[in-house]
Image (cartoon, rainbow, N blue to C red; front, side, top):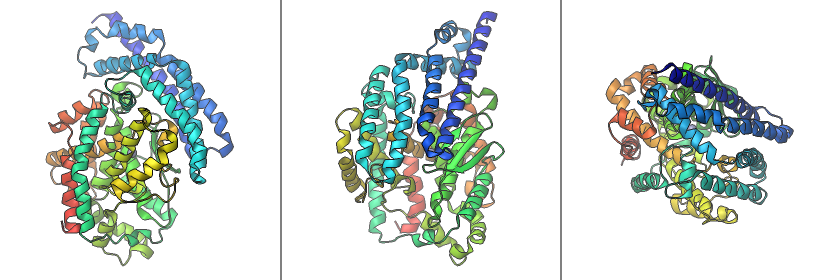
Length: 505
Ligand code: ZN
């Protein structure tokens, strides 16, 4: 390899790291907006974030970046697409091409609208007033359609948006995977309903002091491996995880004194995201080998810790004594069996983020179908609340009592995140498939959890997933680790194995 090639590559890496510096500042402003910012600072914050997003976009479309990539794409450094250098060149080229298809004005307008949209959503949701949210949502959908057209797509406009979160994935392929899942999930949920059994969920609605929940949640997060020296936990209305530096990962949750699982499983979930961020190679921060693969893979990590670990019996065999001590008023006289059934109770419900492991995916399917209709111009925003309620009746047999707890329950659409929801179900599928493989490689995971040993699973994930960054695509990664393409089989098998005994199936 010539010195000139190496020099060009070094310059490319410096360039990418400097862009990451700006993106991380944007991330910090976004975190602050959703956790600490006073309400009236919203308009100016939108300007700050838009300014940075504009700068970042200009860097991504700068011909200097194009020239460096031009020197490198055909070079020996790019030959092995899975090597650090190869992945760096491939992924930066991909982003450069995409960004150059988007006009600067559209990027800035999308950013501003997304920040103002989230602020409008907060207010409209609090007032249960969809009409006041509708104009900005219409604007957002219009802009997203323009974005899809500018980016181009293989089969339908939704492909272009999905590709931003799950690179290389096609709508038709996801639809096929989710249809397979639905085919087995709907009868399972029906069997559970027909069993006539219900988990003793009243246990979860007793009095759980918030400060104690915070302390218990933090202990659980630390036990599974979230590093509080390199991250922190704060309160927000719509929990998220945001990585904004090689040693700075912020997770958030919300507390309800009368509902234990909300914060605890939320914290385990966001810790799963955080453990992924903290497991990335720090020396590659700002470069593709140091970045997450896709949102579906990110979600596989959060879902694994939340559900496959956090809702397992073995996990609670280790933690239940601690929980009983922390919450004596609620749990002192409650058996582990009852508690375990309560946290694994399956029944159709209104709110996605509080849904059980089984019906959760039906919430996703509803959103996946509605947002395709919105983007493909088959459903006007004005008809969205009606369409939403109809799907909830069809898929879950329940009727949302308000738009606040119906169509406005999630922040995503207000923020222009269209194409995002599907990655949640993909994450559930990836999680089960990875978890089965981890069990084969590491031996009895339950025995490890029962002893409070979560480190072996965590290092397995770090080695097999986190440390690879973007050197493999999501589809390549699942094949490489499990030897098979993604399938809904492992998730259904896991659900039947756990829920079967509880419901006598
Ligand atoms: Zn998540």
